[in-house]
Length: 89
Image (cartoon, rainbow, N blue to C red; front, side, top):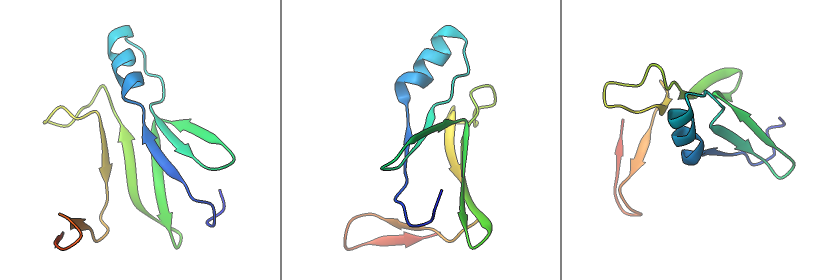
């Protein structure tokens, strides 16, 4: 996909529940653009030739908290509490 197109990444919660109920492993992550929807189990987010974040769906290897979908990154993160306050990680 070209860099100039906005990509919105969605997690299909209904598909996660259906997978759990039916024992299936259908893709639950959608990368949406104005032109297409691309479905997958993992999305890598790239910047300047490097992966800066990964969104993973691993229903058979959830995190210890039980999460089946999560984002992993080594990039600098700024977490906004509201428009006035933020935390850096």
